[in-house]
Image 1 (cartoon, rainbow, N blue to C red):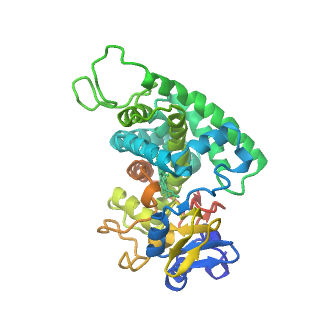
Image 2 (cartoon, rainbow, N blue to C red):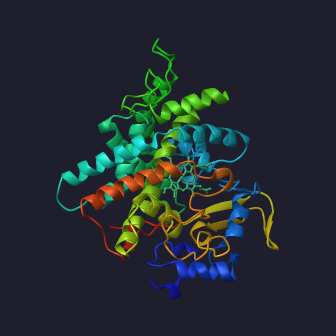
Image 3 (tube, protein in one colour):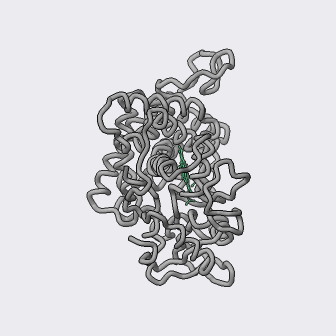
Length: 400
Ligand code: HEM
C-alpha cells in the first residue's frame, strides 16, 4: 500500500511510512469530517488536545457502554469496569486508584525481570521468537508484578491475547467467545492476589509492597498478593474505594493495556535501529520512538454533548478519531518533528493520550521495552528496516 493510495487514517496505521499522509492532514485538515470513515478526524496537536480535554466527548458511545457482542458475558463485565472504557465521577475516582498503584510500580525491578525473561527465551535457541519477546515477555512481567507465579504468568500472557480481541469494533463472534473464556480465567488467576492483598495483616511488621521490614527496597516476589495488586488495594484503601470487583477488572486491565502497545514499542524501536537510528542510549531511543513512531497511533471519542473546535461542531452521537501519531509530528509543538532525535528536550508527546484518560503506565512501558531491546542488541539480534505491519486499526506493530 503506498502513501498515495491511503483513503483513511485507519489504513495509515499499517503503512511502511504513514507520516507524509499524517503531515498533510495536520497542514490541510487539522480537524475535519471524514465522510468515508463517518467520523471527525483530529490530526493536529491543538485539535487532539482539545478533544482529549473535553468532557463532552466520552470513551464509549452513550448507547453502548459495552460492545453488544460481549454485553452480559464475563468479558463484558470486565470491559465495563475498566477505567479505560468508562467516564464519570466513579471512573475518575477509580482512575486515581489505578494511577496511584502504577505510580508505585518498581520499574527498575520490572526491567530486570523483562531482561531475565528475554535472556531465557533467547537461550532456548532456534529462530528468534519475536512475537513472544514483544507480546508475552511484557505481559508476563506485569503478571508477575501482579503476584502470579511463573506458570500462571505464562497462562495470563496467553489469556490476555485472547481477551484483547474483543476490543476492536470489528471483532467476530468467535473472538468474543474466546475473550469471555479468557476473562473468566484471568479473574481466577488474579483473584488470589486480590484476596491476599485484602486480608488483614498477619502480625508481620508493617511494610509497603516492595519495601522490606527495615524499609529497604526488595524485589517483588511472585507470591500472590504482592506488587501491583497490593498497590491497587492500598490505593483503594487510602481513597475509601469500597468495591473489590473493579479492582480485579483493572488488574486485568494492566495486562490488556500492556499487551499490544508495548509489543508495538519494542517492534518499532527495533525497526528504528534497523533504519539507522542512534542507539547509543537505548532508553532515550525508546522514549523518542514513542513520539516518532507511536505504537498506539489513534484512539476514539464519542460525543455525549455538542463539542466545538476551530469553528466545527461535533454533534451528540458522532465519533472522533484522534490521531495521536499525527499530533506527535505537528511542527507547531515539536521542532523538526520528522527527525528521530533521542534525548529531544521537552517533546510534546500524545502517544500516551492526554487529559482524564491519560495513560498511567508510560514509565513502566518504556522501561520494559528498553530492557527487551537492550537484551536483543546484546545478543547481536535485530530486524529488517521494512517490515509489514499487523492489520490493526490503532496499534502499529511490525510483523517480525
Ligand atoms: C507503549 C506502551 C503504551 C502505550 C502507547 C499506551 C497508550 C495509552 C493510551 C493512548 C491511553 C489512553 C487512551 C485514550 O485516552 O483513549 C492509555 C490508557 C491507559 N493505559 Fe496505557 N499505554 C501503554 C502501556 C501501558 C502499560 C504498560 C500500562 C499498565 C501496566 C498501561 C495502563 C493504562 C491504563 C490503566 C489506561 C487507562 C487510563 C484511563 O482511561 O484513565 N498502559 N494508554
